[in-house]
Length: 239
Image 1: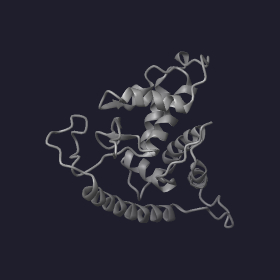
Image 2: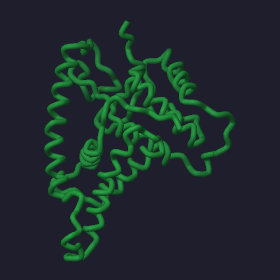
Image 3: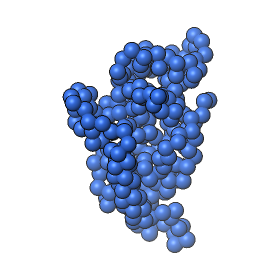
Image 4: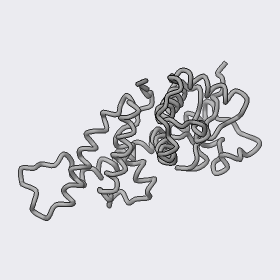
C-alpha cells in the first residue's frame, strides 16, 4: 500500500475536538459511547489507508474504550488497583488546554496569511459564499477529508461494488488523472472525483492521490462552510 506521510500533524486530540464540534457536543459532558464509536471508525479508516501517524491514535482509542467500559459497569465494580489510563476529568482538561493553544495557533496563522498572500477579491465566490476569502482560507482538515471519504464508501451499494480488477491503478496515475481534470477548470467537487469508480481499491488509491497532492501543495481542499461540501482547487503557481 502507498504510504502518505502528512506534513501537517493532526493528532488524537485534534480528532476528538473535531468530533465534538461536528456533533455540537458539550466538551464538559462528552457522551463517551458515541464518541468512542465515531473515533474508532476514523481510526479504522486511517489504518486501511496506512497513514503515517495512524498508530499514534491507538492509545487514545484504548483510553476511550476503557472509559466506555467503565460507564457500562455497575458502581464499585472497578478495583482500586485498576488505574485508568486517563480519567474523564483529565481528558476534558487536556482538551480545553489543547483547544486554547489550537485557537491561538489559528489566529496567528490567519495573521501570517493576511500579510503574505491574501488578496482582496472584487467579486464574491459563489462556492465559498459563507466566508470572506480576503479574511479567511477555509481549508478542509484531514478529518474533513476522511469523513467525506467515508461517506463515499458508505454510499456505494454492495451489489454495485465490484472486486474485478481491469488493470492495476497506481497512486501516480491517479495524481496525473486528477491534475488533468483540473487543468481546464477552476474547481471540482470532492465527491465527483469518485463518481465513475466502482472498486474499493481504486476508491482508496484515488483518496491517497488526493492526500499526496494536498501534501505537495499541488491542490487545495476548501469548504463552503464548516463541515460542508469539499471542493478541490488547483493551487496557484508560485512562479
